[in-house]
Amino acid sequence: MHSLTLPQVYRDQHLNLIERLRAGELGAIAELYEEHHPALCSFARRLLADAQAAEDLVHDVFVVLPGLVHKFQPGKSMRAFLLSIAAHRARHHLRAARRRRQLLERVAREPLPASAEHPDRRLERERLSQVLARALDQLPLPQRLAFVLCEVEELGSREAAEIMGVPEGTVRTRLFHAKKRLVAWLAAEGLP
Amino acid sequence: MSSELKPLLDAYRAENRGEALDRDEIERRIIASLSKRRARGRRSLWIVPMGMGLLGSVALAATGGAELWRHFVGEAPRERSTATTSAPAGARSAAPSPHHEPELAQAPPVQTPPARPSDEAPEPPRRQSLEARAADEAENSVAPASARRAPPQRRASAAPHEQQPKPAHKPEQREQNPELTAYAAARRLQLEEHNPSAALRAWDSYLERFPRGPLSAEARFNRIRCLIELDQRERAIRELQPFAAGKFGRERQSQALTLLQALGELDR
Image 1: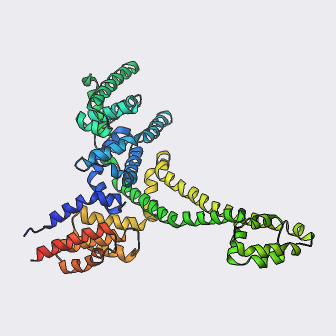
Image 2: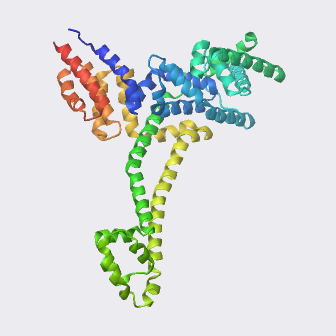
Image 3: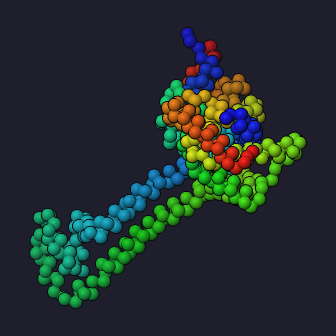
């Protein structure tokens, strides 16, 4: 007779996760958050280059998830599904992040977190990061998404295409134009 | 081309790491938003039909439905003998009820005092205005509530962008949500620290403090998982019974049945 073990039971429960998500069960959302928050936080942070906007985006993804989970196709990657929700909801948060960056540039600089690293190296890294963040602000969202997914997050064009909901060829074209624009903008600004 | 961007990319990656985000804070916000949404959904389940019923009754009354209703209920003769206006008479004569026809035929002699219609003319508008006020109140009772509800949601997502000292908000939020804090602490003990005995104690104290909280069913189920991990199968089986009986929804029922089946198999 086939006997079940506890790990098997938990696996069965995981399969049931989608149903529980559909019902808007908080525990199911918490489980999914537990599993996928590192990937989602990293993507949101790198897409928006702003911690607060990234936190808001991650929050939004999980709040709208029960209403969108019917679009999830069994057998596909849940991580890619969550990232695609984030990608589609990023526009508003990107605007907020851009505004915040511009404001900080105009008014004052954000205080640097205390670090054991040598201050000069730390400052230089931060400067370079901010240069790229500003350069990314010049790109339209689809190109920015392609660049962040393929170059920053180092995903393959296939996975990026799945997340963006476009063909692989489109991702490659967007990536090509994104890089071209970034290099042109950096040259025009005399950076880095 | 990539070589020009490489140092920028390295710096960007290092500066924008996902771990830098406050994952507990995000989780707390997600749970709070979803709980709020659920509560709102539950409220709208009875507020919407109630409001619609009220509006419907107002509309019915405004179109003379109240008079029709009185006909059917049998109040019509009383109404007519005391204060019948000439205006609804036409409408009444158009009513298809043959039983009322003789009464209508007898009605005109009662209408003899000519002062009455003018005396009572203000009455319908008064009634209407009361009903309109009732309708307004009904609308207001829905509108401001939704208006009141909207800002906190916006505040939850938008305010943190604008307002700077982020750490200052966190202790307040934690104080405001002791239930969520207790839930998150118990969950962390169970799922992250893999300490089922400490988690069991945390779930017990959570359930003691919030026996009817929005997360109490989840807490109960997680508590049973702790019992299983601590090899307290009999207790687990006993406490799974209400879940298996469907007291906490269909999903939980099927999970409880699977667990019960597995526990039975393991015992053999």
